[in-house]
Image 1: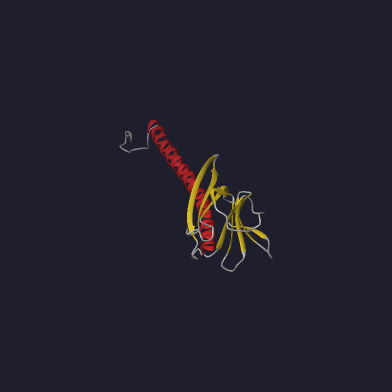
Image 2: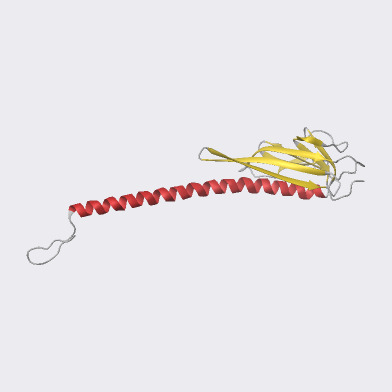
Amino acid sequence: MKNKHQNGNTSGFTLIEMIVAIGIFTIAMLISTGAILSISAAQKRAAAIQNVQDNIRFALETMAKEARLGYSFHCGSAIDEVLTDPRDCGGGGPSFTFFNARGEVVSYQLRNGQIERWSGPPDNTFFPVTSQNASIDRLDFYVFGSGVGDDVQPRVVITARGSATVKGQSITIDLQTALSQRLLDS
C-alpha cells in the first residue's frame, strides 16, 4: 500500500506490508524446498531399486542363455561337488552346474552377496556376474527332469532376491525365471 505525502508524492511499503510479504515468501520457499528434497529422496530410492533389479535381471538372463544350450543339469548343495550325473532338485539348491554348449563345466552360485560363475578345468575360476553395488540375498535353483530317458524335458527355475538400502530403509526385490534345455532329452 502506498502513502501519499502532503505534496502528492507516493512512497514505499509500510513495515507491516513488508513483514507480511517476507512471511509469505518464506512459507513458499519452505514448501518448495520440502518438495525438492522429497523428489531427490524418491529419485535416489528409484535408482537403488533399478540398480538391484538390473543386476539380478542381467544375472538371470546370462545364466538362462548359457544353460538353454547346455545339458546334464545338476543341482547341488555346494559348488565343490563334482558333477557326476544329472540331478534334480525339486526342493531348491544353492548351486547349479551343467555342461555348456562348448562342453565346459559351468556352475553358478551365490557367494558374499554376489552371483558368481565358475568354469571348471582348466580355468577353475570364479568371477562375479553381479555388481558389488547390488546386494544379492538369496539365489535358489530348482531342477526338474534332468534324468535321461524320463520323458520330461529338463527345465530349471531360478529365483533370486536382492536388496538395497536407502537412508536406512531396506528395499527387497524378488525375481524369477524359468528355462528349458533346447536339446531333446534322449
